[in-house]
Length: 251
Image 1 (tube, rainbow, N blue to C red):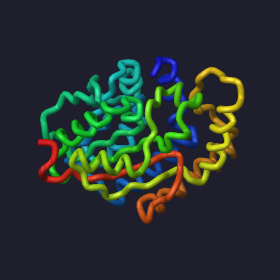
Image 2: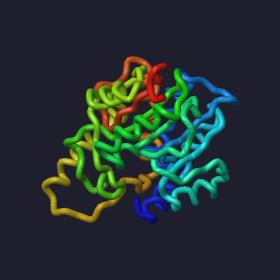
Image 3: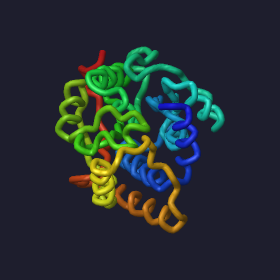
Image 4: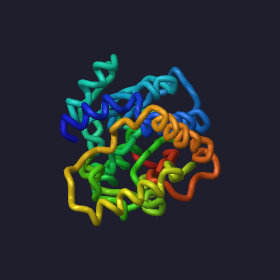
């Protein structure tokens, strides 16, 4: 992403409803399926401006990795120290170095076929039995809008595609669910209008709504957390997956 987009992300991610709601969903899944630990080695692969580094702190010793030096500067401003500049397709770590890898909306920027290389690298650096938590944008037919262009989303995923790619990389899928279902109809309408209205400048959807609206949207998204870690949601703007590395994978 451009430097300006990282500035926008850093200002938004502590208050904007989408970031706050997704944090509740992610933390709920980790608490239910992984649990806190002081000794676990954790990698945030594509840490952006650093909000998830703080979210991951209860789950182990966290290392943040991002290809952008601009992003890492924001992480340092948050006080993060364990930071590495590199690509998710060429992780500069020894095999079996981590117990948990989190990667949010990163493979979608890499796109096929490099997303397969990224998954292979996640499997390589995880220990057998280690966990991978992925969050990715859903539905190819929603692609190409102003937001996707602004944040350089090259690929949106379907459940069957993601499950197949995780399996091929050596993972057993524990959870695979859509999320952000309650606001899906509104977002789908917006994407549809973008296709028929005159093209406008690419812009990330990170403007902060009025306080009550922001709080309502945050609550609605956060309320999906128990559904995601339970039976799952059949539709939504995002896919979230928790998978376990098989003992014979990624060595």
